[in-house]
Image (cartoon, rainbow, N blue to C red; front, side, top):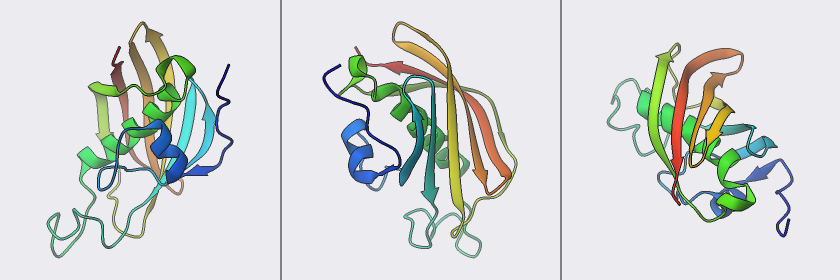
Length: 149
């Protein structure tokens, strides 16, 4: 293997070397656990000045569910794209199943995003993802992705 996996924890500089996402759409601050191809744990601090805050909703900022799902997907993409054969590729979101939102996420919360990759067949993979605030489950779902070949 010519490129060793990055040592955890690592921040946005290393995340940006793995994922193609950039501000304002990079939704990970740090990767705290990484078992390439299998499991990842990452964090995102939800901030008062996040781009969606003024409009969702002006008097009561609530992180949009689709952005929570996107953050879970980006975490999963780290586990897949850090693998040697996927370096420099893009993992496209191909589906979400059994998605549920259990807790409102607001500025000041820190999301812990976990994704366990269950199966990979060729370029298609599936993983179970969760987003927690502390010990409270905020969202969960089964993500399907396709790695660009």
